Image (cartoon, rainbow, N blue to C red; front, side, top):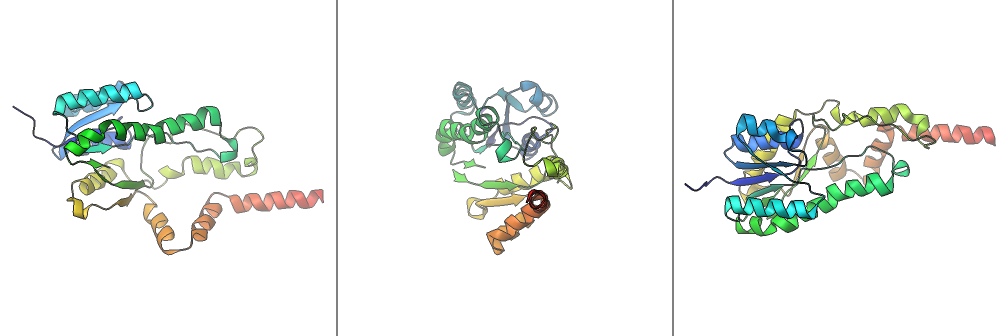
Length: 251
């Protein structure tokens, strides 16, 4: 008997992150879920507990994306209702300290080119199903969510111009987890938006801790107000005073 459930593919669906929670929520809402990850051990719990279908998929590899697209097409008859480009690489490092040839290139491979590969390879299946890329495009602006994203410690490189405000930097590394929204609560909100009829789906969806604050500032205040808040929160005014004081001593 043919499976008539709506289908959704989620990249970066490892348990402990937003993708894993989205996979569970879509499953609970009756979707046929394809949870993908570069490391299949991170999605094994979804298969064991919820019988969710899991696949290996590395968004940085065209061959891997094409293989996944072929496999999904064979399983679904060539249609995909929802594509969630969730896989992402976050880097909390000042731009002046970034390692361009390694860290920055890796980030672009996942966050930019990875999304482009997915859309390119799955667009035919989405069009066939008149589906959504999460082909009405919905953009989710995510605030602080309780995930594993802050588990990897980092610090400033030796000689960084930001070393005088190292305490602010360390706070920034884990800032997204302070007062963060539970990832399952977030997933329920996102899936609820996806399930709305097209005329009710927002083009932009803001969810997560402090997301509404950012939306308000960017919508109703001057862009300088947003810049002012960021500079104050992350210690740039303090750095400015320190630099000015050191310059004054030299003079």
